[in-house]
Length: 171
Image (cartoon, rainbow, N blue to C red):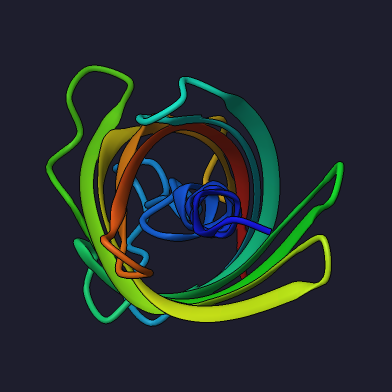
């Protein structure tokens, strides 16, 4: 079991988990301050060293403090051949003003990832930064996409990029 495989597992999961586009403001007609949001996403992650692509999925919860600021938490996982990982990542998302029919956002988070590659388990910290757009379908349901950069602090550290796609529901 190599450290490289452990880092790959951690980055795969953190690319999905950290700063993924998992929540969105409603249309301009309605305020979202004080509302809760549940979300789900999937992503393709590219490990910068090795150029391998992996798929991940996750769920999230957030609470809008204002129409623009939403702290939240995501639980994400990656399962692959000889690799499994689980992450818990608190994050903060800022939404800009609506531009035409989309809402741009930036997000950041810092969390913990536990991965298992073959029979070796490792837990480490991850930092993620993301940006993207939300596309409101109506006042409760939105789709989103973006790009996420993740940095794992296992070993020498490693980087990855993810392209997440998500759906969210306000309540």
